Image (cartoon, rainbow, N blue to C red; front, side):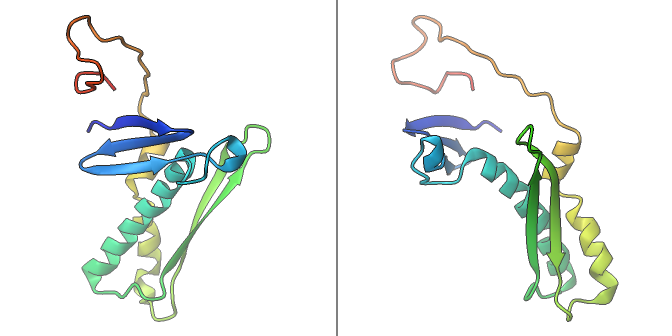
Length: 146
């Protein structure tokens, strides 16, 4: 999967892929306009929503209503590094939720693909390249590497 990253102005950075555009911005205190979530906030949201889609799939496969099911993700930051030191996802189930599935729904949420990538991180590399002379028309990004 290729994502195209663009810079529409100010502190905004967008990612385009598969016909979608994800908009990001920085908070006003960081020089942005707060017109969209910050990239790191989207990273955190991807963890919670990934666990959530596993819960949705589990419940739908068993005909269990999601009414009254809520999830809350709490992030604790290390005061020195300012990075998350703990991320806890609480799944609040209503009394009507079948008792026999309460532990199973927790286990399925833990199978989230985002969590798996964090647990076994891929190698991430960053490269800087320049277009070859004569191979690119000004403004054409179709041949630029990501």
